[in-house]
Image 1 (cartoon, rainbow, N blue to C red):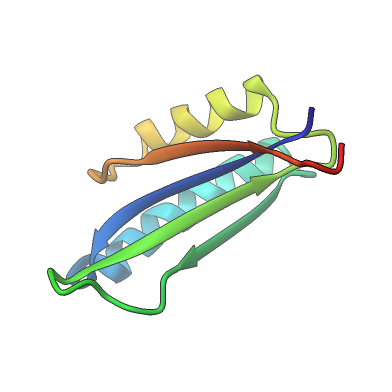
Image 2 (cartoon, rainbow, N blue to C red):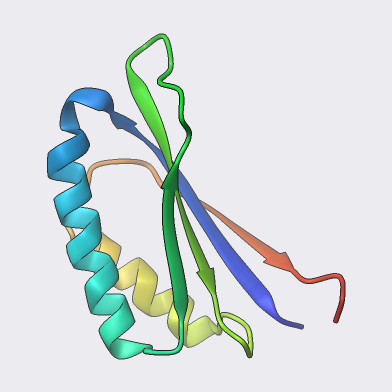
Length: 96
């Protein structure tokens, strides 16, 4: 089964620029290790009434996101210095 990984978290709008810099650095490290891994970073267009943006990382690989890739992603973000609780969702393609 081919897995696609979705990771989402809330970022205070006031921390947008600093969080983006840290996330971009982490994603570059992941991309360097797994060059064929497709990574998208997105956010919801609206900001919550509490002042939070919801960000989403999407990881897709033609062969599926492997356990090794997931472990590396978790390790890189554990070392990235981000203090946001990351929710991780694993989906499989129904076409397979």
